[in-house]
Length: 206
Length: 246
Image 1 (cartoon, rainbow over the protein chains, first blue to last red):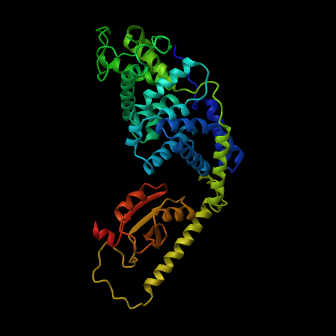
Image 2 (tube, each protein chain N blue to C red; image 1 turned 90 degrees about the vertical axis):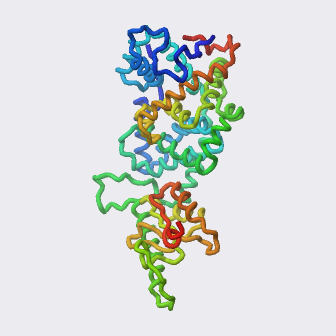
Image 3 (cartoon, chains in turn yellow, red; image 1 turned 120 degrees about the vertical axis):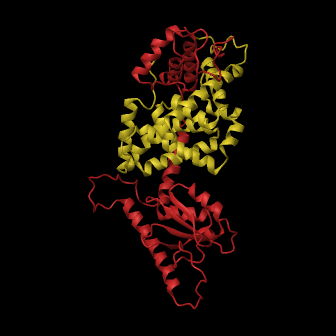
């Protein structure tokens, strides 16, 4: 009944990541470059959608993968490699936000049209594109912590427990953030979609 | 209206069952299922959670509607299948990363700290740390030597119990870096904050810092917060006159 959801937590993806990380720990640059190529696109979109700033996203992702390279040997296998990397990315993003603008400023500016456009990959199927745009606009209305929680859960495929580890909070806090994010999205998404959307294909599909 | 409109009883109050839920259904079970739907949609729910949701859905229109909405949101957050790879961005990022590696020194990545590693197997990390420790100790010895040199200075007219007698006069902060922080990174951080090393403790695990410019305004309190936000910093605290002013 429920479709399977491919993400970085897939065993095949995880085993590749682990092999590349071990190679990086041994000083193998080509192994690390494969890891970089695998992780960079998703990490960039994750950071961009969480903070809405393309200039920060590049810096945060490069900082993240730099730390991965320098500390590859410290990974002890106590979590998935992807979760470990996502945790580093989250901390680098918080650091970049602290150094630059505050989270409140990020929320106030939300995600602008241009940023949405840059987050939106070129894609021909109009309905999917419209749905993606609609959801991203809804997510942009969430407070940063709720938005990050949603991105970690739905985009990066992290479990509730792993999100708690990444964000250094209790699982109850993660659940509460998800709850409030979902309630808010229930309220704002129809407004963002507008009432006369008969041809959008994103409504009435229960 | 659309399927996204919250049913009666929903919105900011989802602790109770919606109006179209059978009376026999417990509200706490409904709330639990509602919470679990997100993890089922994300593909990270346990088999037991999936089974519970599946058993609940046939008799709860509200949760079926919520499942459909969350599936739409989840789909909207995924990358399209034919997402083009920005090869230029990847190449540029890798070039910047390797340039940073060159700047940071010839050492490779940090070697694994495993129990089976031979004690005398000097890793690049250990070498870097020892180099940094030697440099810091050299600074400490210089500072200590200067302090002990008979310079005819009158002794301070008061001593606080928490203040060692050898504390350099200009020192305003004590900083303990994490073990992995190398000298180059430490220097960069101190330069960014306009600080210099004026001393260290006996085993060089903590550093005493002072403003690089003697005439700089006193910003010790703010500096403590800024340094604590830096990566690789374990502890920062004001010392000497900075403590007395707090």
